Image (tube, rainbow, N blue to C red; front, side, top):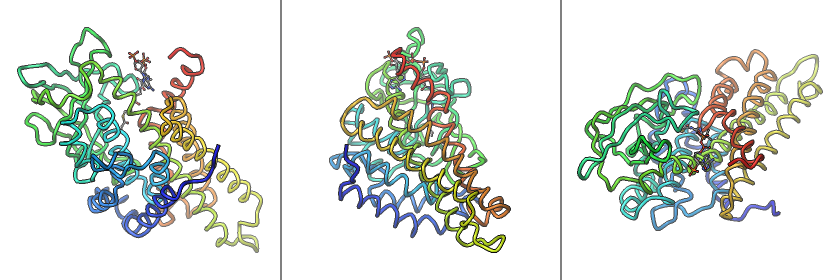
Amino acid sequence: MKFDFTEDQLMIQQTAREFAQAEIAPSAVERDISAEFPYEIIKKLGELGFMGIMVSPEFGGAGMDTISYVLAMIEISKVDASVGVIMSVNNSLVCFGLEKYGSNYIKENYLTPLAKGEKLGAFALSEPEAGSDATKQKTTADKEGDFYVLNGIKNWITNGTTADYFLVMATTDKSLGHKGISTLLVEKGTPGFNHGKKEDKLGIRSSDTCSLTFESCKVPLSNLIWEEGKGFNFAMSTLNGGRIGIASQAIGIAEASLEASIKYSKERKAFGSTISNFQAIQFKLSDMAVKVDAAKLLTLKAAALKDAGQPYHKEAAVAKLYSSKIAVECALDAIQIHGGYGYVREYLVERYLRDAKITEIYEGTSEIQKIVIARSLLDTK
Ligand code: CAA
């Protein structure tokens, strides 16, 4: 087992760190308040190759590995987890699935602009009555001539109002249960396809989340991804990689909490000394550092397995479960260390807590990750 990153991986990490400081940090606080989508930042991330990091250069991507993706996601999310999730969805839930399962037509016409960052993608699995229980899809896609006709509602869609291309899971054959679910790529602006209002969220506020509605929306048969009936497997397979992305986002938040706490504790004076001299503070900092390190190792392990072409669904679930849990814990500790200052906007750490919470919910709740892990341990899946 090697712990050294390659020169390319370190270069990606450094580029992401510098970009985050120079281009994302200045507007992060304001966008958290205004909930404005970071269009310019996403455009620049695309120019850097960060919207299709793992996609092969043949299809407009940067051709890097999952470890590089993890390192970049941590640096970006450390400064702004909203930007982190926009980047994660495009990379792991959209580009990865299209490269692995899309036809050449799909790769040339849709994956390439997505990987170059010229277009933005979204992933539409959840429904009002199908969240964790994702097999219970009510959205239907009936074949009529050269088209599928989509009808239904999707919920909680990241990049929902801003994306150009949507991967929509829908039932093409009700009688087959989850084996009758298929994935269709739907373009923004297709007649019959509309989005709801942007949700007013607790955290990751400048990312964009909304519902989608499909009413007799005609999608060409050529926009089917993989095969009819493979939509649920497609969703599960892409979510395995997505969970590595969200674990990395959570680590970014946890590390930001730790760094803010170290800085503050060395500045803040109480009882005749900086508070960094007190064991009560030191123990918290140590606990946070151990958690961040452990989360990184778990997430890099899942990424390394994925890069090696080995099964990684359990490791991705472990990484997401743990990283999201410690992101919330580290943000809470950071607030405690900051005292009253931690509870107001000026010191950022209250945002870390608001941003951290969603990592325990989306791309599979913590409870779902435990199911995935337990099934793997018990060899029932
Ligand atoms: N990897 C690959 N395949 C998987 C899998 C995984 N992690 N989990 C299940 N599957 C496959 C199974 O092998 C099975 O395949 P076959 O039919 O070919 O044999 C099929 O999926 C059905 O699996 P189960 O019988 O286990 O289905 P289930 O209903 O008992 O449970 C579940 C499945 C694990 C609970 C699943 O429904 C799940 O992961 N739910 C959570 C959904 C989720 O993560 N939603 C996130 C929404 S997307 C989002 O948040 C994006 C965003 O915008 C940020």
